[in-house]
Image (cartoon, rainbow, N blue to C red; front, side):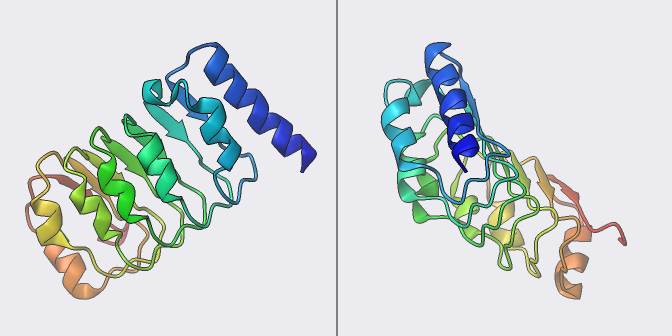
Length: 174
């Protein structure tokens, strides 16, 4: 555990000291986003455009995360155990891409459809059965949706096969 803490601290310090626009905390055994990180990154949070929290054990992302990193363009949360996203996700007015592959979503996170700047949504390998196509079709910037390896119901699979204004990656069987 001490090694994981040192690893997180080292990566955060490098981000601050080098003025990087990305923060990579993947494979750090995190179960939540450390509260202390907000303080350390407070001077540079507006400069951070990309955050990778992939392959951790995150069960939730706090409201504070989304209200702190409002300038994010890309957020990679694949390989965690997330089941929902906070309402504050809509504060992400610059977010272009979100990777939620290989998490534990059983319901499509509707809050995603309120982020009007989103171009890419990756939900591969979750447990989602239905997709809110009308809401997705109303998203002005959406170009790409990956819902491969989800147990989509027959109606949803059928609806996804008709033409849409964005590209859809479906299950491999289709």
